[in-house]
Structures are given as structure tokens and as C-alpha cells.
Length: 171
Image 1 (tube, one colour):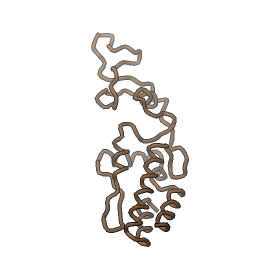
Image 2 (cartoon, rainbow, N blue to C red):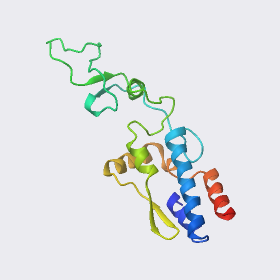
Image 3 (cartoon, helix red, strand yellow):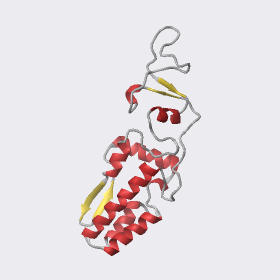
Image 4 (cartoon, rainbow, N blue to C red):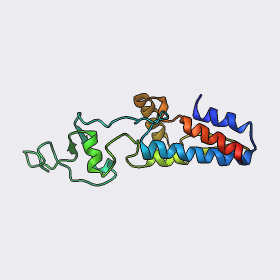
């Protein structure tokens, strides 16, 4: 059962007001777990960033600026032309250069997917919401994360389901 299906099943049993409060708090917890803690719904690390495969990055496509350099660390080729991209020994090294978390995957480099997911709940009827990304590029990131790390990344954890039920029944 997907997160949206579970949440909507709970809505049908409770008032729209209590359901809205419960689902918003559950979605917030899921967002923090995924993008803050870097955990899947089984409360395990989503994964590890690649630390083996070299990477060339255009500074225009990076959250923070950096000086383009080649493998040797030189800003220019042997012929004197300037590098247009930066060499990094791995994606993990690139993230470190950008001041981002590297100890575990948290799917948050520029913040676009995080912001889109955090604000993705859409009210479709009283007490019913769907979670849907609005930015097409983020849909690709979401699908890529599922393909690489599995569906458990974006599913609610057992704890989140329990808190949803608790919030619904105590309202």
C-alpha cells in the first residue's frame, strides 16, 4: 500500500479536520526522515553516495560555485585553454565540495526535490489529500531514487503509520 493510499484509507474513517491535521504532521515526519535523516521507511540508511566513479561537473549546474579544474588540479589544459568543468574523484567528493552531507544518502543537493515533496500535499476533497510532485524534473529524481534505492524510501514507516493513527484517534 502506498503512502497516499494508506493516508486516504485513514481519512475515510475520521473527520476531515482531524484527518487533515494527522496527515499533515505525518507527511512532515516523512519529509524529515527522508531528506533530513536519510532513512527509508524501514528506518535504515537510504544508501551511500558513490565514492569510486569520477565525475565532471559544470559550475553552472552546482548549488555553490567552484573553480573548474582538471584531474591534475590545474585550471588550464596543457594547451593553455581554461577548463569549463570541474573534476571530482566521485559524487561523494563533489557533495563534500558543496558542503553537503556525505555520510548517507539524503536526496538533497539543491533542495528542489525536498521543497517539492514537502509542499506536495494537495487537498482533493474534504479530508482527502494526494501527494504529488509539481516539478517535472523532480518527478524524474523521485523515479530515479525509487529505481536506485527502492520503494521504501517514500513509503510511511511503521512509526509514522502509528503516529497517524494515534493523531486521528486522539483528535
